[in-house]
Image (cartoon, rainbow, N blue to C red; front, side):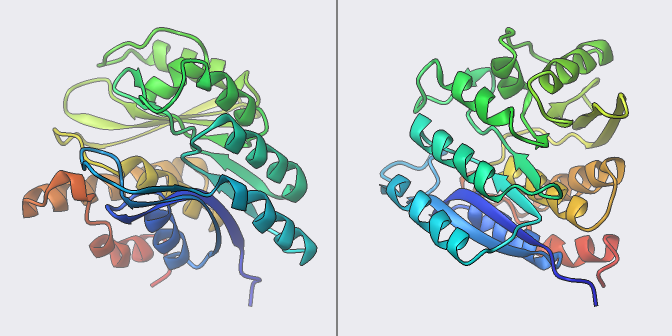
Length: 283
């Protein structure tokens, strides 16, 4: 039997509201990949439209956890980062990359910091500079359009987009350092929404689209990233992984919208896992 692959997931965790670790852990684990976690913060709920949440910063715990893992000589096939709440956390995670990255370790960074043309209010204006430095050490980055524009110091534009514009952004993002860049929130018309990827080594572009469902749904970026990483860990190429991630995310949104679930509570990804495993030939 093939040796089980292991991912280190460095994200915050919300007790309620499906995002970050409460998405990454079940999805990646379901696809047969072991997940070890370093929580960067613990919240009672996510912060998207839910007032009164509690928040405990775990910055001081990140390095000791990593040091303990290092003392045990734990190896990882991938390191996956999401929301990092401060420059200090960025620096600590950068050092973790240095400690654990081997020749065959995939460093997968979701530079969570902005959406809808705006930097999240919890971040200072120069935060994208710190995130850019972290992305320099990544093999794969998965920004949305807003985050991409902040990383390359370009003004944000509303869609629909032109293909030349998207491919120009992807090339500029690859100049930061990663060999693979995936851009989410891409659409060329009002009917389909998806993602685009650029493989710097092959100098090739990939696209994946699915039905565009109106509305904003919390946690979908975490779902897309977790699915994409899972496909790469299971031997799928980027073209296949993009389409699987786009279709799965869209189905989660459709399922949640049809059920009339409060959008603040996250989307129903759980019901889609059996179909995901069939598509990945796990069932």
